Length: 434
Image (cartoon, rainbow, N blue to C red; front, side, top):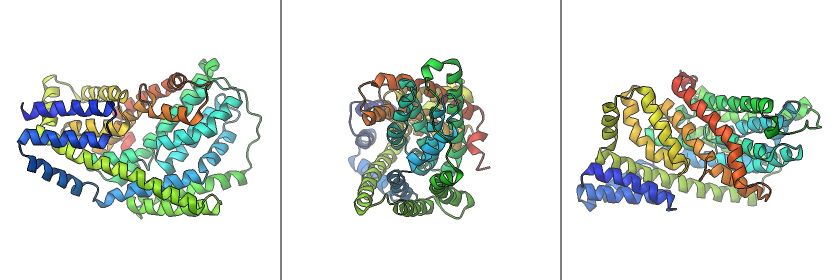
């Protein structure tokens, strides 16, 4: 077989192995290693490339952001800031139809800015928001759908692990990716709130709900509950935006600030600190292993010439910019039904990067589009990791997995509309950078 045929088969093999349950980094590394060996008929060359991939990937200074931001997110979750933000948002939207759903979106947007994890958001707000909405007679499908939909904000609003992974694949600045994610993330949160307003107006039976019999919080309480989160956001994003801190330094400063906040609130014990450190190690090791595997995968694609072949194929069919992006998003949506977000980004993005560069488009913008498009997969069956997380966290026999997927469907459609806007108006992603 030719290198091109081997490369094409290797991509298919990776997707099949991941879908069958093989650990993602092992599937990427093993198939890529064997493919390079077969292409060059040289075992030593494949072994040397594996060594180079390890040395050139996770040894980079920029990847210190991964354990630092992971630790910060875990500390913030233990400090109970998610519940505080939800209480404030709940008070703000209490008189609006679907207000508890809007409060969940707003709280998720703020919580995302200090955790960077969709799964963490889904887990926290499944416990905080869903029982509250059910208590006030909101539709069960709407309640879980809001949590599932708004949880994806954790992967686009910085700090985000997916943006860090993309920055490695595309060789872009982590700080630039973080800043580029702010406006699209806020746009997505606003679109979710508008969608809830429209659902409340045109599909009131689906939304349900009675007006919560709660009073607005005093300003002093609001400041006490939101102050720590505002401080964290100011330290992390403010430090990066002003140029005072690099992404790594911002991660360290955010971790220290989060630790101090948790200690002052009496939410941090030595046992809790040790638990956060150990969990940070587990999460960081898995992400860095994934990045190492992706490095040799990218080299394998280069050996096979797949990106160039894809470029020529699209040119033969005379697809313009929007045609290429439609193909790209459709491929993302299809793989989203089979694979998780990280797998999709690592498999698909390297194939399209040369083409995007050739069209003269910003790779930072392309990263934002890629992450939002891939995140739709968190809400779609059969994988839908956010939906599975909510089901496992709630453990409520009255709410089936099917109900969560149905409830999340409107929010997946909203994300698709936002992806279209980001493609049509790249300036949205680059607003802060320009």
